[in-house]
Length: 553
Image (tube, rainbow, N blue to C red; front, side, top):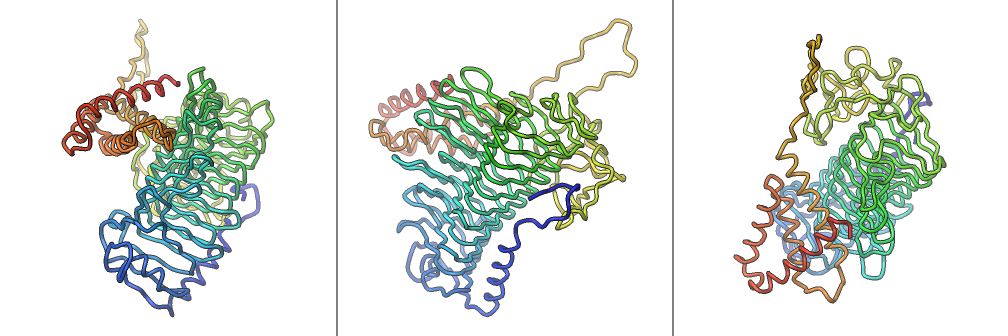
């Protein structure tokens, strides 16, 4: 997998998958359609019964059903070649009560799932979906799932893709899942991710004795990410090790093109800090082209870790036409210089790039001047370039979109957002189309006054500060949930309280933290979930634990 214009055109690794799904589409043209008519977990008209009754190649139509299908009879095994169509992830969810996973795709089966939310599953491998076949996921949301067990490590909170299995994830959202490795996704096979957001997933737990890998994704197979955003994922670490790879941990083959990796965190709760806030490459190969890697961080109680944006242990990484805007820990770090970093040129780094960025067109120690992560006209959020960004028209002047298969003629946002404007492309995932966004910071006057005055410091946005604080509390709460699982000495109501706390925090990001917590307390008492005395004991226990997590203990 090589996304570079200096190499011969290569096709992305979707040939086999496309062929198999094409077979499924052809078979479906002559297949029966089974219609789901209710949200029951069994019996006539249910999704479970439709799967049981279907034959190879059949279509299951759930587009007329709205609400939540709550699974009370275990996971939904799919051991046939099927197409399952829902009305939309915002209209129909398939949920478990953290007693088993949601879907299991059988070995060598060809399955397409679209328009569903897949929530609240739990298993050692793949809390939401375990795939051993060939699977396409389109316009789905996979959230709130967990991979883990008391005596074994959990892999792939949202999705686990087995070796020799294949998955394509398109126009979807993978968020709020947790595991020991691969909070959102664990890929051991072949996977393609397109126009998808992977956010707010978590790996780690302070009581664990082993390191945690890949807050968003842990890859040991072959992974191709295109036109997607990976943001706000956390590898939180353990007593024995910091978290490794807040956004992505790679031990296989990884390619990222026209993507945004922003605001991920590798932290530590014991002695050791985290490493690789955005990406950690342990021993595999990575190719990064046309990306914006911004503000990923490493931190921990003993100080900062290494590689805020990218941490190399071993292996190789090739990078071109990419923005590197450092959070804490710097942009690039190669442990003992054992990892090989190759610049294809036309990168823009806010620091010195650890002296690796020396090819034609590389800019170092330069502020890239990017806007906040937001909706700039596509399903995935991006960082726009501000009007004075040095990334504008600074990409390779010889760029040819036809050197890629399929041709790369658009930026991360896709159709309608040309990759080249005004004769030369920009650096990063975002291409300025017409009028660039006006800078948000004051520009100094062209002629300074006789007596120099200090440059005004921008005032921090209180709402952004509140959101950041609540996001951290979400991370602490998820860590507490994960680490207390299976601990018999903790009251059973603790888990329920934490889950409710997490839900309210996520729903109330606009509120200051204290108000969000007050709402939780009121809801607990109003709904009679526990007595006042029990609530006080519970809050004392949980707040002490959360305070310890904040301190890194």
